[in-house]
Image (tube, rainbow, N blue to C red; front, side):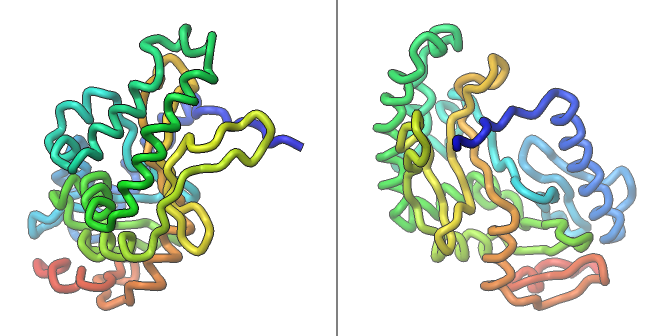
Length: 258
């Protein structure tokens, strides 16, 4: 039996996801004593800026987080990706494996997927180098350290993790590999997978399911596996309130304004 292909979010569903993100950010801001017109910079991944001037990337949801969804121009122009010892070029090569229009792609999907295998295979090989994996994760999640915390709403509590702790834990514990063809009609090496205890924690893949998102590269993380890993490796070291808990080295910075 084959699995039913997952459908992309409708415009309304996507709007609801964005609104939940805004609501979670506001809830966290109020929980740490900020006003409703708290400071942020969404374009720089800074969902909430606290009283110390430190920034938080707020993640909620139950299943997946979209870390990024970028077009070719992002990898061509962003210095953080361009200077990552070839990683930015490989990300661009994944996009360039596909023809300029979705109409041409739909006429011959197999050829594009075959071309994608080469950069995806090389990307997995390079990201097995710990220093490059660390740099990629830091750039993708924290905009190369400009964002100070990953703050996750989980079971109605906000859990605050320092950027360096998160990158270190992921780099030391994640296995990097390519996807395999598990069902008839599938093609291997279409994704780069980040795995923990044999299960997918992160997925780097092309999105070609609609004209709006054609030739975009997406990096997703699976929330339950992320939280399992972070809770396992980073002890709780502080408590701002019953609503806000602090982990690892985050206690050295977060809450100084209290």
